Image (cartoon, rainbow, N blue to C red):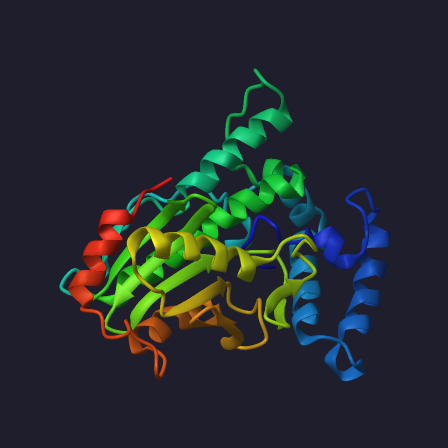
Length: 304
């Protein structure tokens, strides 16, 4: 099961309701195995999801633990998505990128606000990140938490770029916010971190997928917010990235097309740091001095 607040519940993966009997659950598991088996034309990814779903609810004890929201220390799927404490650097001798801003902070504030409104004003919420509570919340609420977690994961990877890079998180503009701005020898990058809870693809220069609402246009949004920042800072972005979790797209790095003067790519997060560090042929800061670009970005950056 994907480590995402938007991930389908094991019941949804198996095609039953949470009230299904144990016998109904077993029949659904066998049916979904047949439907998704790669040897019969099914999807390997879905086949794995079905098996993982069965691990979570396939026995009375596992089902009771899942339904109660209990955590299993060995299970990444049962994490509570609470903010993680500051990490001790694994390799303190390696300089990290200079960073500014608070990745995921704005989305977490929005999540907590909407969660309290949904639960009811004045109601006690002992743990707003309790798995059972998160799973029961409306999708729009869970999407805010998923977006926060996605930004935080991306920020961890961007910090490893090294001292030659500077990163700004959650930069506000007149028309929205830019999740991440990265500047280094390979250019000026505008980055959107997302988690739609399912696989996405590129179609006609836009991101589409089951989890992407038909009124959402992520690439257009990224183009719009970065255009506003370009005018304010008097800079030009070299490239644009939409970052998703591993396995949420068909390829590690997939071209989207052009966004104004720059190229855009759909990138799985494990490939992100390498792509930004090594760069793209023909992409750079356009001859403008790197120090001058950094000064302009730093002067214009305002955080949400």
